[in-house]
Length: 95
Image (cartoon, rainbow, N blue to C red):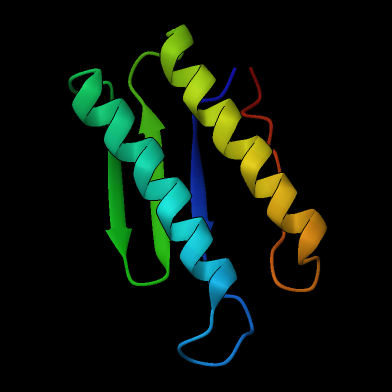
């Protein structure tokens, strides 16, 4: 089960053509908005330039887990296409 995600940094494309960062921003923003707005306060986040932390409030909620799982799949697809520009890791929370 996913408890959330962290996103940090920028890909190494020229200014104005950073498609990887744009894709990551769109995917993560969509996921956060879907969980926090559609499912009404089921997550919390902190966002700054080049940095986003998101945590779900109810770890056992299947809907938020599905959204984060879909995000993970999409980010892994980007990593496969642009391996020098994005790294996706899954970290165990110890539980």
